[in-house]
Amino acid sequence: MYAVIASGGKQYKVSPGEVVELEKLEGEPGKELVFDQVLFLGGDKVVVGTPLVAGAKVIAEVVKTAKGDKVMVQKYKRRKNYYRLRGHRQLLTAVKIKEIQVS
Image 1 (spheres, rainbow, N blue to C red):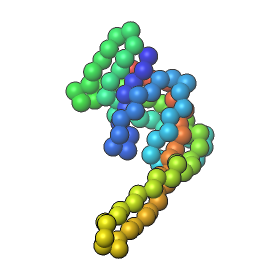
Image 2: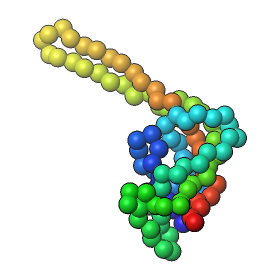
Image 3: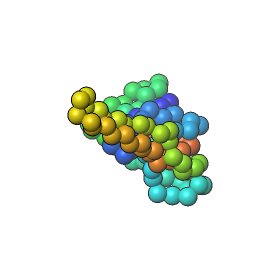
Image 4: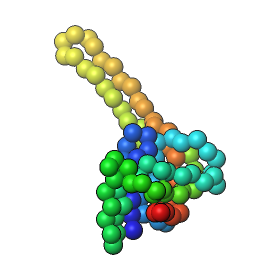
């Protein structure tokens, strides 16, 4: 069984036992999180939410919080002596999916 959840303005496909990196969430390692914005359930029986699946939730545990890879952003205009270079590292939270509950 798998589910599609919404977190941080993005959608993630998750299944039990999987470790997923999401945008930073509050919580120390070992804390349990509940995602109640379930958009889709797949597996033997498919359930599509309108927009959310009623009574479904995903339970996960925080594994760690870290920074992601650096993304370089550069701007350049030829013949104008204009060049800008910036870097960005997104804060991420790794969570382990424990179970998907459907009522």
